[in-house]
Image 1: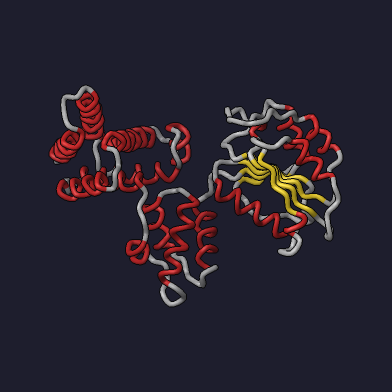
Image 2: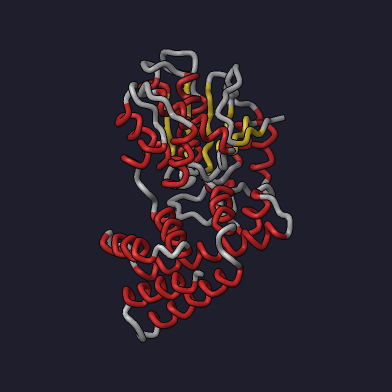
Amino acid sequence: MAQLKSANLSIKKPLAPVYLLFGAQDFLIQLMKKNLTSEALSEEERDFNLSRYDLTESPLEHAIEDAETIPFFGEKKVVIMDHAFFLTGERTKTKVEQTVDRLEDYLDHPSESTVLIIVAPYEKLDRRKKIVKRLEKTAAVYELSHLSDTALFQLLEQVAQKYGSQYTREGHEQMMTAVGPHLGQLANEVGKCALYCGTERPIDAQAVEEIGSKSLETNVFLLVNQVMHQKTAEALELFHELVRMKEEPLKLLALLERQFRIVYQAGRYQEAGYTQNSIASKISVHPYAVKLALQQTRAFSSALLQHALKRCAETDFQIKTGQMDKILALELLILSISGKVA
């Protein structure tokens, strides 16, 4: 019976003959593929005994035939099958139609000298499918999706340690606020900060503020905060900065409305007794987005958030019907909501 390891990168030895990696965190999937390959093969062996197949372009049979052949100058070989779209219900553009009979036969008698890594970079598997059920019974299955904050901190701490730098909790909080829960981007930003700080200076909040980037969603979060705290000048300055960065005003409006709605819904669910993770599931956003929204609910009344949502809808209508220039409409929206705060 296979084990399901949710966002866990530890590898049990000896290596399993078949691994299934799935989930929405591409950074984790790539890291897990790298870890498995490193465990199975030395640097020298990879030139001869590492094969990759994109199943949206290559027939499944070719990968299975490769997995069944013996290694060349070594004890193990690794065969990676990327984009196993037939394991999910999502529609995917492909150049080939895959039949899974060959894979089902292979799972009955997998090669002892091959580590077969099947990658399905999708949020969910279609567990109604026979092949998915077979894999969950016979393969080592890793779900690489959401990480707990503790696991995320430890992972980013390891990124910093590769550069000989110290990643602090204070820096982590600032990094999450600036970047959000995007793991690949977080790892890149931690790497940048580690190069900046070196071995002499820890990666603290100040260091992150000095060198770190901000995602569009984070800038919108800050814009909402500025509006709600009547920092109208700062809000308008940030808005114009985003426009100078070629961000489309209608897109900014949609993100503003989304953030106001998340804050409003999070507050209502919290009042009803829901936990942070339950709220995230209810409104289909990342738990960290809920954490930030709940911080904003303490400062903003339900009536104010309803007013903000109403004004967003009115502004959207005015822009799309040609009644008002996009930039002017957003400026007036910011002034209207900020002026209502009192």
